[in-house]
Every structure is written in structure tokens, then in C-alpha cells.
Length: 129
Length: 393
Image 1 (cartoon, one colour):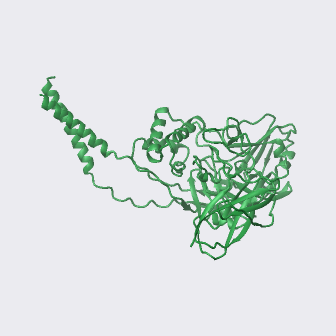
Image 2 (cartoon, rainbow over the protein chains, first blue to last red):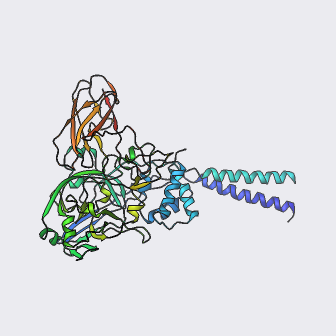
Image 3 (cartoon, each protein chain N blue to C red):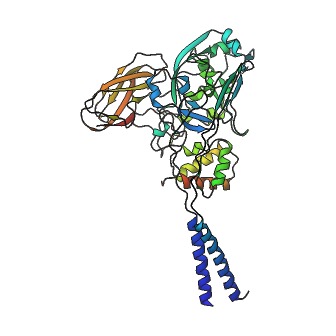
């Protein structure tokens, strides 16, 4: 490839990236979401049978790297309120918690995903040590 | 040539920079306390929904007996019991027994003498959110406890009926709840055979005169007076008598405390040896006034709170209105029962305006009093002196 073409290609790529970046910036501000309906619960006694149903919460999480891993893997065993009720912790505390889930409670999460989840927890709920 | 390459590289850098700026770092999440009304319950604080954990509002502790509809809820396994047919429900007693049993509710109510006890149920992690530095876990304030009258059958009578081997070492207990994944250890706790055979250990089918709320373990709950509520298995369905020591996860790995007395260690010097948590640490709390309550100078304030132990009698409860410089003895209500909490009262008239640091400490008949400081990595067994701030206008 001649140097000239190389440079043109580079500028084209830069231009494309620039265009994408500008497009992102130009997106309109998100409209406020309608409030979540309150979770619905029930309880009944019919003869010898007692039955209850607990509606689950649906907390919102900020965008960021690792968000989808956090929302799917962590929710396998328990609701995400386990995390949202925590105060902010330093990174080493979050690392220890994620490790505990895998080592002690046998959560099936590989080490790459663990790192992503830890990074996200740090992003949304951490304090400097 | 040079100009072109410079522009191209610059464009690339600028574009990439613009893109990364658009990925604004996510904002911090802060979750305020939320009130919910769950099945058979009135307004309580939601800690978690799956599995459910609910905290009692502090004002409910102005009552000596905690009503069922406000009693705290704590499950470990997300597959909680949501349906019971009491006609087909059975309590199984198995293992080192001459006669394995499958007891129906009718059996429990007709084949045994009923017994009852007023006993405090308190979560091992009650008050965890007050530890400094903060520790992960359920972020309870003081509301994961409750005082109730429990009625049921003595565990020893059930074990005798089954002909439990007198040389048995441990007895394990499991409820109907199940782990979310097969790989996760099921929630099983154990007591030593000696402990299980004590008169006070009950299999309760009634709580404050009513069947237990489903969220508190309907139809049966194990009552272990003086020990933390992690042992008080809800929806109790399986009792297993063992000639060997039980080393299940929830006894050997979880719920560990430092071996040395005091449930105390420091972050830079964690205890090497641990044991399963057991007896309730002596502690005392304020119920009135609540934190940051506005008070009026020269107006009497009925200061009131609770003190509790593992069953050891309380000698006195003292409060300080000057951040621990001086202590005044409070008036204790009559004892409700050996394992019930005990109410203390003090009539206080603050004279000067300002913020006061109120403290309370209990002393037992053996002369033990509460420490100023205490911490452990799990936030268990709070026993260090409580301090609350109130403002006098």
C-alpha cells in the first residue's frame, strides 16, 4: 500500500470514529422513566393450604462496563438488593465478596467475568482505601 | 506527506478521545431504606426481596412483645416456602434413632405436652450497619430482633419418642427452604446432643398465640433460647440425630466468630482460630428517643430502651447524657422471663440546648459490662456500647 493511500485510509477511519462520536453526543437527553409499579404480593388460606406470593423489586442500574454481567450472574442466586443495600466499599472488599460467592457458595462464574463484575461494583459503589 | 500523516494521527486521537468521553463513568448508587407490606406483615423495612429479609421499625420495640405482623424476617435460601398443606406436612426425625418418625401437626399437638417460653430471637448480624469500619452483609440497624411467646413441643420429648441414641454427638436441623443452585450448600444447622436435650429447646407451632406467619417459618420453628437466631430454623421439617460431629457448611464455614470470647478482632489482626457463633452477646439499645429526635430544653423526656443477654440475669442498666463521662442507673422493668429482653427507663430533663451524645450500658449479675469498642469481619454479635445523638432546642 502506498503511503498516500495509508494516510487517506487513516483519515477515513478517523472520520468515521469522529462521526460516531458526534452522533453519540447528539442523542437527545433520556426522558424520565415512568415510576416502577410497586411489587405485588398475595397470601391466602384455603382449608389446609396456605400460600403466599412475593412480587420482586426491579432496581435500575447505571450504564457501565460489566453491568450486564452483574445483572445476570449475581441474580442467579439472589436479588440485586443484596448489593444495593451495601455501603460503598474499597475495591479489596468487593473482590473478597465476589471471591466468596464463587469459592464458598459455589457460584458458577469464571475468573474473567468475576473481574468484570468486581470492576462494575467498584464503579457504582466504592470508596478509596 | 508529513502533513497528511500528522492530520490523520491527530484525527484518530481526537475521535477516540471524543468516544471515551461519551462513556461517562457511571454514577454512584445509594439506596434509601424502603418500606414494604409483605404477606401477613405490616410496614417493615425491606433489606432484600429474594430471599426476603425485613427489618422491624424501632418504634415497635416500645411493646414488650413484638407482634407477628412486625416480626423481623430473614431467610438464607432464595427458594423459600410459599405453599404448605398442613394436612400432608410432616416433621421427620431420622438418623441414629430406634424409631424414625414422621410427625404430623396433629401428632405434635396431641401426642406431646405443650410447653411455652418468652424468648428473644435476634439475628447474628443485628446492628451490623453500626460497625466501624463497615462490613458487607445484611445492613441491619437494630431491628432484626423480636421478643415473642413461643408455644410448642420440647425437642427432648420428640427425640425421646424416636429413641434417639443417647451417645449421639450432634443433631442437625433443616427447613423446607432450598438453595437456588444444587451446588450451593443447603441451610442446615446443628446443636450438640446435650444442648438439644435441654428443656428449653422447643419446636414451636405457635407464635404469640397464632400459627407462625409463613415468612417466619410456618408451620414449625426451632426455638433455641439464648442463642442467635441462625439456629432457629424456620419451616423445620427434618431432624437428624448423628453419632459423628456435624461439619456442614453453615456450621463449619459460615457463621464463624473468633475463638476468643468477646466476638472481637481488628481489621489488621483477624483471629486465626474461629468457632461457630453461639450465645447472645449482652447488649442494650435506645428505643426512645430515636436518633436525631428533636427534644425541648427543660421538658422531661422519657428515655427508654432494651437490654438483653444469653439468659444471664441483668444487674443494672446505666445511661450517660454526657458522652460517657458520668453514668446514671436507670429503672429496670420487672423480668418477663429468663430469655426475654428487659426494658429500662429513665426520666431525663435536659436543661441546656445543643446536641447530646447519649450512651447506654448493661451489666450482668456476674459483673460483666459492655465494652466501648468491638469489631469483627462479619459484623456479628454487636455488644459494644450504643451511642445516639439527640438535639435539644
